[in-house]
Amino acid sequence: MQRKGMSVALVAVMLLVLPNGSMAQNARPCSLEGSWLQKYAEPPGMEPLLFVESLALLDPAGQQLGYRGTAPNPLRWTPFAPDVDVAGDAVGIFVRTGPRTYRYTITAQGAEAPPKGTPARGQIQVFWVHSGVATCVDDNTVEYEGTWAIFSAIDVPAMGISNQDRDRDGFPDAGERPIVVVPSHLLSKRVQLREPYPLVP
Image (cartoon, rainbow, N blue to C red):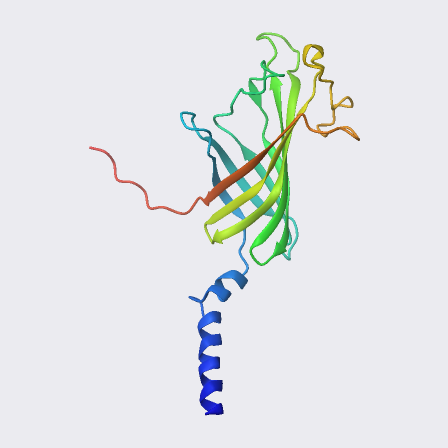
């Protein structure tokens, strides 16, 4: 009877660690290296924000990845910087915290374009920091849970807002706190190889 009980327990453990078992799925390391499309669900009636992303290894062990992303349809919504019409690329770092989880920080800036025909540079008016945890749902889907922190890079006296990046290095100055912090729930899907589509007659 004892041997039979041990056999049943062994079968149960094997079912968990086999490829179709949940323990195996949760324990098997995933890699974020590659190209991704990330969708940010806006309120009903608004066009979703889309990020085109690329992640590359920074170390041979795969513990850190560099991030670069751009939004083809950025949103002008910041009330204290309404003139922003140029969205810079986002850059960031991902650090592995488990077989299928990473901590991440991503940052980007928004600027007002200079008048056409002038040699002036556009003024950076706003920047944001997105931080949280990324979890592999499967090998081709990643779920992000975190927050967006919005900072001002200009003085807005009418709203009591001061420039939070006076040294113009793209990061919040020491001691500065974000003007706005909102939760984020994002889903990224890997860009995979596809067969060429047939020509349309």
